[in-house]
Length: 356
Image (cartoon, rainbow, N blue to C red):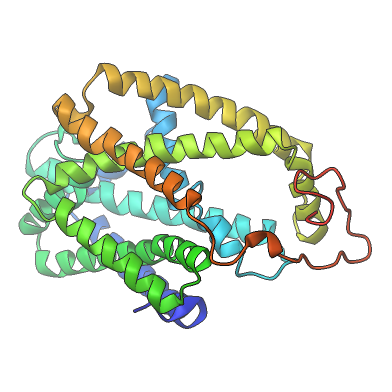
């Protein structure tokens, strides 16, 4: 329904309601967790750095995958939503706000989670490092329900946790599905209602088939691992490499600096177009070799092959098929806005001086 109502009437109104509500619920959740017995032990574990972990490639890859997911990088989400904003918009200011707000909320989430894990460790008379089921989907759907059943006021705590989880999932879901729905609308000339119905219908069927079974948590864990740390990271490497080969970074930097409050220089270009894709590629290759040599989470090889590599293969094949299908309206008929006085024109742009 939210997608069918469109971006302004649907997504914008939904987020105006859901995001503040999510923050309120989660703050209440964190405050409650801080007063649990053992919460201090959890906070000590959370804020005590393990410097040796910085030498492990899998830690950096997991960190990149997490921030990519939480900031919707390399999903196509930024491309889709940028098509809805004005042509000449301040990008760096809102970008910094989004980045710092996201990381602040994640620190808040970490405080709540580790305070709760400290309580669980005290109840089991063990240390947090020895707890089982504190990573991946097991933390949300197995460990936390167990904690809720043991703590004082567990019903209220459980409501706050699962209400927050539902809202976080819903706001993420509509942003993800809007990208797919918008793509179908542009490709096949569909209305928002038609796009939402078709995308939502197919997604619902796939979800029921894959995630409404006894082994659903393990399927979700495997698909999530490969989609994030293989699919998304490789997508980012390919996109950044393509931008370097097409010499798009100078064009993008000039555009950003022409309209944004915070200017970016050559250092940004060096990091975004040089250091980051190289580091990502190295970590990606190390992780691929690791999952090929060692079975992820102890799952059988056939299981990870079917649901892990199978998910990546499905995405690649689906993308190739959708790209090959003809457009309802020729996208090359796009007419750009005329340049404003002082705006730099890149005649060497790969798509022609008119597009630039």
